[in-house]
Amino acid sequence: MSDIGSGGANRIELESQILCSALRLSWADDDIEGVLKSARELYQLFPDLLPPPKSDVAEKPTNLYQMLRLRCDVPQSSVVAGYFNAAKKFLRTQNIKEQRQDYYKILTAGFTLRKPRLRLSHDLIVVRQLLIDKKVIPDDGTLEPIVSASREPEPMQMVRTVPMDQKLPMQIELLKHAQIIGPAEVQALTNQMGIAPEIPVSELILSAGYVTDAEMKSIQLAEVLLSQGKITVGQFAVAMYDERTQGVRMAESLQVRGWLPTELPPYGRS
Image (tube, rainbow, N blue to C red):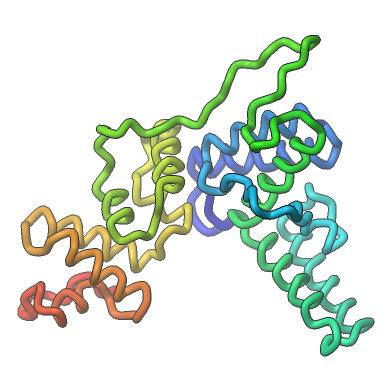
């Protein structure tokens, strides 16, 4: 789920925007059934945005909309305006030296809600707690309704899982080897590929924000080098780590480490 306006619309992006709107409208109207339905469908698309509940944390997740005095269904532009208003009001009325932590909370709320993926993750975590509190879903956070004697059971909607022997696209495998994504992100990409197989994997990865455009070019280059037998997966993982932590492009790292001939073109440079 990319920032709105950051690229061409695709099926996954359009569907996620529709579901996000449905979730927030249902939440604002206290339509619990609508909240559960939207949350379950969003979880199918983005299982990586709803981590398991932390059993060792007694404190419930914070509703950041309440902190900024916003409705949960406001558009993205209103989130930005509400954040700036809350920050300005705090600076006018409070002593920031004495209440620095409270000011940091406002900054964190603004940063989280201004980013579509972080906002959706926040929303899913908070509404899951709402559904638990209202005894709609079990305490373990599974997005399956608790069936009462007077209520017909709903069809179970479990997250699609990846069979152990399923071959993943090379770009996803490389992201795994570079430890850029984990099982939840792999599951999210797999679900999205099943829903919209016409969308290139690279576009799904970029839309999710797992890597930058430059990093994607390095990953695509690594595909070529691996297919030609010029590098190993382990060498790629080390060089990709250099790119993400030291600002050295993957191809340059491979050459500096002696794993790729320096007389070759400067692969991966933008």
